[in-house]
Image (cartoon, rainbow, N blue to C red; front, side, top):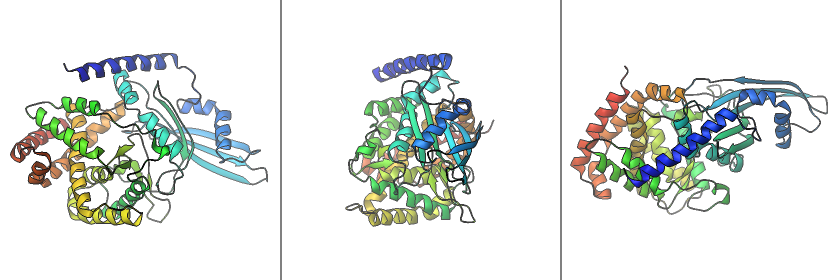
Length: 409
């Protein structure tokens, strides 16, 4: 067993012990750890909302309700609706609608240990602490955000964006809504394009050792080939120019305006935020969130739109041809990142996630298989030095394995 695997197992073992202690002792935290605690800590909640400026000083909270929602859904942390009716000092009344978000319950200690190791809670809290309110980022307003690093606990109090529209992962994103997502990516990416910003210092760089570990997870006769491909596309993702990425830009992590014009577009669930090539968000979205017929018909047009929006937002020296190459590399990185959990049937932190992976795995497998059909293997060989024929054979085998793993039982 390689040193990286041994180190990984050691770290996971230690974090499993931490997760067990936290689950067993439920040590008091500076913030509530779940909806039940939030309901009991009404005074705390009113205090932080007053400090954030949402509530006026001297206001009287007439109603305070906390109700869990989206329970049992895939890829969801613990969430609750928070509704307040407030009497202001001037006698007027106002209602506030919020979402409270907490870390997934640590039902499976190993999965929760990996959740802590990935620092998902830290990244999401950091995004809302440092970047919420930036006019270039389409996201909900934030009133409180904090994470407890050692245990993986998280507490967010954010705007509840009502009147908007959600699009199912299975349905896929229609072309007219794809444009909203692409525009949001361009605005976010341009704001942090190829520059250092102290607000993003909390986004740690993923070490090469982590990619080495992922590369070693590939199984079968193509393990070495896929491992080398992953390392190469990852090295490309780290090359300048880089920017801030959402990192999990699926349609399920987006809110769209309603058909009546109510609501606005927003990116939510920032647990995978990182720095890298802007094209990754674009490729990840188009590959996983669009039916292949939509991706094939509209990808080039949407790439043109994204590039034009980057330039309009002040990005210089980034040509359309370079974007095309970055997008192709990003498609390969998406294939690698998503194939591994599908092949291993792993997910993070909750039984609902495992069910969601089973429900959506077939759809994602079909969309990735369609992407493999569209790959330019001669281009891949020219850029990576890996044999095109071997890659075609390896991807064909991988597609069969993914289809077998994700087929309905």
